[in-house]
Image 1: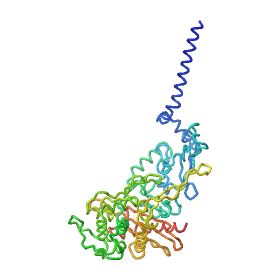
Image 2 (image 1 turned 135 degrees about the horizontal axis):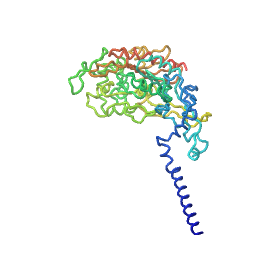
Image 3 (image 1 turned 180 degrees about the vertical axis):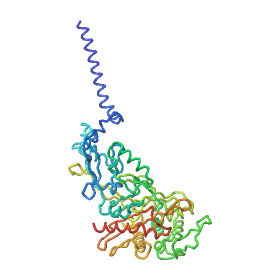
Image 4 (image 1 turned 45 degrees about the vertical axis):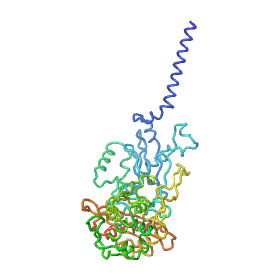
Length: 485
């Protein structure tokens, strides 16, 4: 009898060990896969069981959380949702997260290990901390000036601080209210369908995710390449540019909207925006020189984040000379985000040193203790200081006596460049109005802001003056707000 009892006890012990081993396998080895199983709602319920951390602008929160009393308790709320949507993105119980809500989800949701009181605390306890906060670099007055200036038209504004790379404004219109996507149910799915069906694409972040032909604003890049390469040694000397100018290897004549472009100097070509002068200078610099300069400004960078991903601005690395000529005046396949063109203006304003743009100043715990702080970092020295100084003078002339007069601010040094980007088959599409600029107060040691504006649906003709008429006043308003803060 005792022998049978021992056998039974041994079998039970073996079963107990097997049970413990299986429990350990599930809890240790299979935990991650079970956590990520779509059928497991525990993580989702836990995710929304506590308020989400906030995104701050100028020390004030532009987000919040609302207790719904439902199983997924807390929904995201937004203050001035359409104004800040290109910055915050959305945090939706149905559709996930975008932009800062996505890039800093660990901090905002409380799952980031940096929020824990001790290393590995979250991993050991499988717990979470109260959601932390994200402090942005955005200035409310500049954001609002850009948003109101666009007035709901399709377009975007990006503004940066040249000396640091801090993004001061990031606006895309028409916009949407991300709070309408926060929860679940028919109202959320209906809003999602409506927004995605809208031909004006309100959820498209035109400031960092849409690229446009930059048109004549790209001539600043070409001028930098020509000066740094020694193709132009005196910006006020003639450039031996014929009129008409025939694109190399073709019988196609390149037109000018401006008068007086035959043999015009580089300075005059920038002031009145001569296509022929800048196209032939790009060819003289050569493909490698133009590519190197464009990439120094940030073109062709597929890894730029702010921390949200920024779409690649394009400058082709393989072209014939006629294509290079067109690319050098912002046509052919050349394309840029508004943030990219703000980086162009910023590099000129900052003496040739381009600072890496960033949108988040710091992250903190729920109690305000610092978790991580960002700071200025050089992206690239794009040009030498003398070249930058010469370009600054030329951009000032554009505003003082050229096509950018609508950006002038009394008592302030403003440099700018207008542009009208042609697109569509045979350039038949409605042109985009561009303006890039920087501004420096009379008592300041360096420019306070660099800005780029694009207006898609501008009532513009194909003259560069349209950029000055449609986009320059918006840039002026943003720069005035920067100087008043």
